[in-house]
Image 1 (tube, one colour):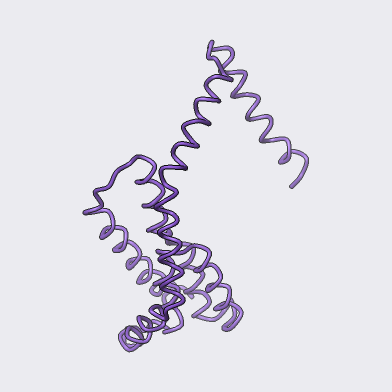
Image 2 (image 1 turned 90 degrees about the vertical axis):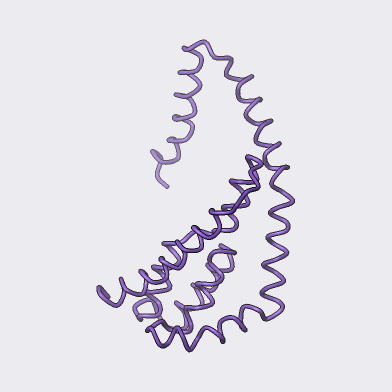
Length: 172
C-alpha cells in the first residue's frame, strides 16, 4: 500500500471527527456508546457463532460432507457439474474459511484455467457463507424467525452454482 493509501484511513476518521465536532456532536461520547453497543452485539451473537463452528466441525469430521457429495455426484455429472465442485457448493454456505481452503485445493489440483478451476472460482466469489451471515445479522438484532430467510438464501446458493457452471461453459 502506498503512502496515499496508508494515510487514507486516518484522513477519513479525521474528517468524520471534524464534521461531528462542527455539528456539535459529542464525538467521544458517541464513539464510546457505539463501542459499547458493538461489544453487546458481539456477546449476543457469540453463542450462535460457537454453535455454528461446532456444527461445521462435526459435519467435516463425521464424513457427512463426503457422504452427501457421493450421493449427489451422479446427479451432478448428469447435468454437467464436475463432482469435485460439490464439496465446495455444500461447504460454501456454511464455512467461509473451509470453502476458501477447498477452492485453493481445487485450483492446485486442476489449475486455475481448467473448467473445474474456473467454476470453483466463480462459485466461491459469487456466494455468501449463508449460515454465518444469518447468525451474525439476525443474532445482532435478536430476530429468531427464519421461516423464509434460510430457504431463500439456500435457493440463492443453488442459483449461484447453476449460473457458475453456465457462465464458465458459455464464456469459458
